[in-house]
Length: 557
Image (tube, rainbow, N blue to C red):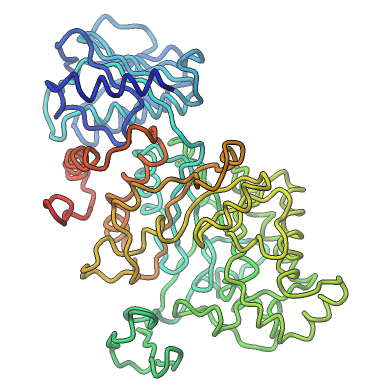
């Protein structure tokens, strides 16, 4: 590691000549310029050489990229050509760290070697950032030697498609953005109070009923800092807290879902970009869409549940499954279909914000607690999660849950996703269970990028620098405990995100900051230098037609 850090400082201080040409995000572990100042000149005669099909996927990706953004038609060959060549190869001896790759560029060839298929693909993403940010007939790439590998194994991004539904094309584009930044996990939030988005063949009402709501909230949810918000007057209104606040909904039907065939298509698409999709099926709360379809699974079986039209209502509306055998059978059936679809080792089961009041008010639930010797509702939450974990484990899979799964005792094999700060993650790491850090104040990209932002967004503020400076391993953990911090994840909740361009605006450039936090050596991080490199990245986004917050182009955004 010290060797790579030393190389980084050589790059930073000794090669000013090409300083403006090498602007890579996330910053590689080491960059050295070649002895020759001659560039590799890439044009339509350049060929991509692969010795076998193990790296053909990366070759195809590169060909598509050149065709789409540079109007160059390249081809893959398996016989080493005499012409200038891009060589892709797997070499298990590259580097001493997992997923290490090396790039060597001279005037005659570009060689990308990686320990594995995905390492070669990561090398491709770095090569793309050596390209000019405008279309040219001949592309000149400087002579460099790059050695690189990720600092964290888990580098994730989340997308909520329940509060607003996004079509398959948008989800695929989102996955492309993750791949471009060397992220390797996509957390797909498929169910919640506001819509059930995955086809379950055994329970067709989940999408017939649960995938659609009759309106969406107008403006911000009233709460701390939002009391003065003025709401448009419409026929639908519900008085709630804070005192005298009135919620308005637009009365416009919203929804959609993914068929199982569409799910398979997205999974295959992500796999070609070495992104693993982790599906989330929410339980025991955030389940109003499911209860609207199958009310007999709720703690008020005679109640007419409706798919939620407003946000932030965990203590106001009953959205909790009853912990009955009928419910567990339903969830096991659902999870069986989900597990059959997703090759991921991991299934996210939610576990957050389960208001205990609904279990307290349910005589049937209280009897279940008595029958199982459960002292309180926190113990019932633990019982619920343990039941589900045992089933998921029986299918050879592992559960991930929000940090509330710690309530009443952590399931023995579960991975904790710590969102209410770092406390839950620290507690899990100390008992040697894997942790993904995603504290709300550092990792929620639905929060405003700027305090005075006009765009409708959650009222909290998450500036770029906060994301960049976040350190996923808390100082409270010792070296042994730190090994259980698997990585971190950015979350994008879609309450106020209704179209693909708003998705892009909210994640860029904070995704760039997150990628460097999770990929690059902690010792090499420098926010001022990151901002300089970001200007080149923005030009690349312009080339690719990506929307981003241009306020970062000004000296004091």
